Length: 232
Image 1 (cartoon, rainbow, N blue to C red):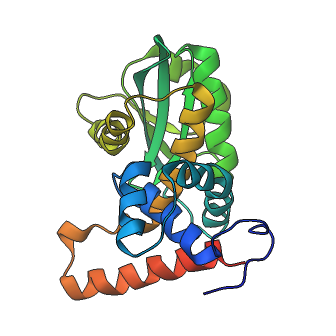
Image 2 (cartoon, rainbow, N blue to C red):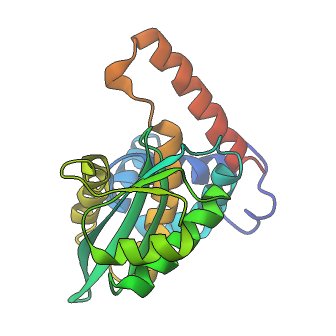
């Protein structure tokens, strides 16, 4: 096992166990209790609270490193928003995916008006480092307001069914939300989706449309990307 060094200093468990626990949580639909049991089966006695703290502390760092080495996004963004209940209040989870299914960004906001749309579009331009060639949305007027101001050159498609890709991309997050028994706060929700989408992107390999051999090759590349992101 690795020798604990910064930022793992003063942690009782070595880095490879911490990294494995964080990977399990954001890669699969597992609770902190599930991971506690999986580690216990390997003779590693760790509490679910420790797993939670590891995910909160190290997850954002791993996600930032994954995004820095990301190969880039396509030129077409499919954008959609879905409501989530947080502490009894309705919030909106804004999401953009490209034509390859890569999640460009996710933002939790209290509204879905023009101001909220412009805030999200600014994040997308910063993440993409330019405005996309085309955006696909539903007919919510807020998108038109933001596009005219921030992405004037982008083609805007609002035709029926065109945005199914974005709508379907919410499903994995919905599954995790139910497993977590809803998000506890906007901060917790934003932190989770930031990390989850970064991990999801590198393991989003289109397994159902490629050969087993090709999938195994891509999976090895995904593992290499993860190992690079968590390297001390």
